Length: 86
Image (cartoon, rainbow, N blue to C red; front, side):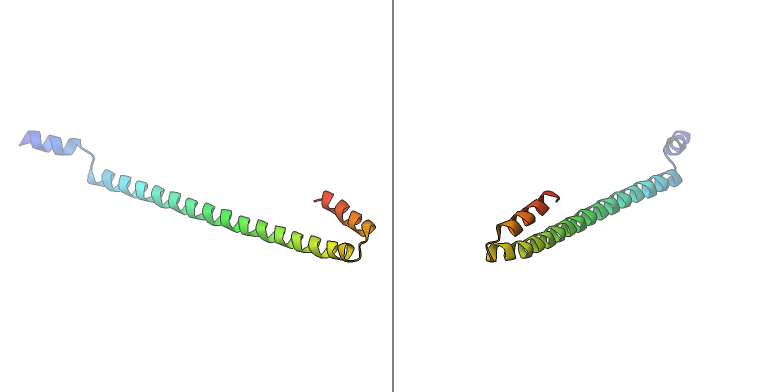
């Protein structure tokens, strides 16, 4: 009987097991939250980047339309010089 008691008491206590379980659960929840936020941020920044590029393409197209319509080489050159700054 004494051997069984010492074997039971030599292992981790219930308090230690519960504490370990809570720590592991908290770490997993924190890691999952980080992954979700990172994915959301990546997706949002990509959408913003695509929106910025779309706006830039629209503005460039509107600016170049007049030069192409009226066959104005100097206005076309001016538009092309502006692209270098981008």
